[in-house]
Amino acid sequence: MNTKKEIIQQLKEEKNAVILAHYYAPPEVQEIADYIGDSFYLSKLAVNLDNPVLVFCGVSFMGESAKILNPDKTVLMPDASADCPMAHMVDRSVVDAAREQYEDLAVVCYINSTAEIKSWSDVCVTSANAVKIVRNLPNKNILFIPDRNLGHFVAKQAPEKHFIYNEFYCPRQEFMSADEFSQLKEAHPQAQVLVHPECNAQILALADYIGSTSGIIKYAAEHTECEEFIIGTVSGVVYKLNESRPDARFYFPATRPSCPDMEQMTLDQVIHVLKTGDNAVAMPPEELTRQAGQALSRMLELAR
Image 1 (cartoon, rainbow, N blue to C red):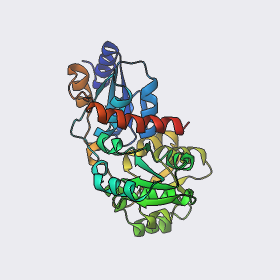
Image 2 (cartoon, rainbow, N blue to C red; image 1 turned 60 degrees about the vertical axis):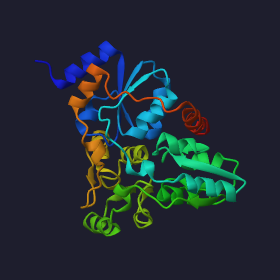
Image 3 (cartoon, rainbow, N blue to C red; image 1 turned 90 degrees about the vertical axis):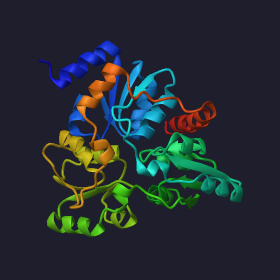
Image 4 (cartoon, helix red, strand yellow; image 1 turned 45 degrees about the horizontal axis):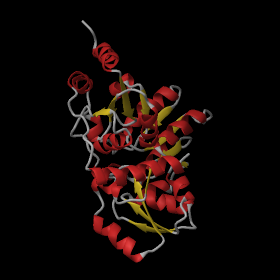
């Protein structure tokens, strides 16, 4: 009897499909993926793949972005209910008010947002490229949506800009405790603290390195002189950390940050969508797709 991994491989070959998995997907899903990465890497990659079918092991905004950038491809979501709370955390009134108040304004939208919110924006960014893109924008005034923590981090790297913030955040990373990080540092004084810029300011202040998920993995892989790391991001990243640094030890805060929507994904769901074509991402309305697509395409251009 074929294993689930063998069944997936057979179905991939039959459908000429490719499996993309975010770093926060469960380990068994990352294990069967053709490509693993963060939002920026997977968005960029999807444009250049020839496969007509993309199985996107992530949350809904990732599937939407992949479909907008690849309108002629079929994008399948193993778990159609997987969502990101922060992807919805901005009102149109915030954008409209900023556009009315500031003439020289760019609305910069974190890619962790719905297609509708992207359509209100001038350019999308990820945590990996936000600083570079904001610095490259000609605009003085930046409305950063929806994540205030990432916005404040970018603002410190681009002091020549004037930032306006949306007061929302990733609930998984906002509520991590700086005290728990301090306790870990006391217990492991030689460990370096690597955190995601979606974390709150108290945790960022304790960090030896602040960067995207891919940046955290790269930092740990390159700094072989360090054998212990305290990690401030969603714990799904530990699969790739262990793979890249099997000799190192990784510690997470006692209140372990998790992404429930990602973690509930299963190999059975991957098999199901490959067999049936269920959970195909539909193209948003034409005008919304055009506007969101412009913001995503501008991201890819400015991040080169």
